[in-house]
Structures are given as structure tokens and as C-alpha cells.
Amino acid sequence: MIDQKLKVLELRTNNMKVYTGKVISKKMQKTATVLVESVFMHKLYGKRFKKSKKYHVHDEFNTQVGETVSFVDSKPYSKIKKWRIVTPKKTSGSKKIVAQKKSAKVKTKKK
Image (cartoon, rainbow, N blue to C red; front, top):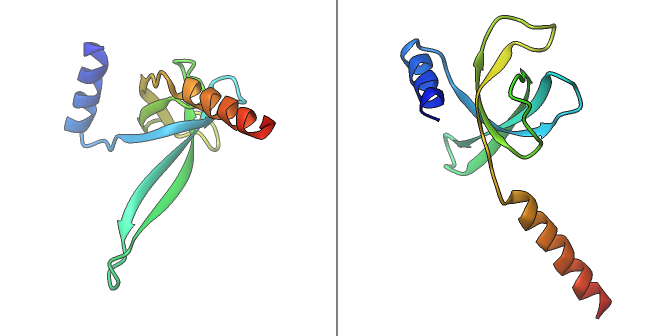
């Protein structure tokens, strides 16, 4: 855990931007599709809105769908993969919540 934090700190000192996103697809062997959402404010009206972008990231940590990961730019691994995962962050409990919501919906439909 400490080693992962040191890696992120080293990358920030080297002026590399560290992105954080959620894994949305893991259909390829060493590639994960990561969704990065950022919130912007309209210049004139001041309304906040979200912009999201998908990145194909090289994955050596064997992450699962739903995990939050940090990644940085790197050498091109292929035509579309120019990013690599630095630290996977486990999000425990997210699958349990989804399962509970599904079971709650089923129970309400039976009544």
C-alpha cells in the first residue's frame, strides 16, 4: 500500500498527470476500459455539467469491473492503448449494494 502511494507521489513530482476513473469493461486480456468523469462549470450561466471520456488502459493488475483505478500516460502499447494503471483501488461492497437493490426490486414486484 505504501509502495503504491509512493509511485503516485513520484509521478506527480515528474509532472505526469494522474487520472482516476472507474473500470467499465474488461473484455480484453490486458486491457481495461476506464471511464473518467469531470465536472465543469459553464462560463456564462454557472451551471455545472459532467463530461466523461473513456480510455483504453494497459492492465497488469487484473482489475475487475467496478473498481476505481489511477492511471498515467506511457509508451504506446497498441494503436489505442497509451495509458497504464498505476494503482488499483479496491471498492468493496459495491457488488453487495447492487445485489441488495436487485433483491429489493424483486420483493416489491411479488406483492
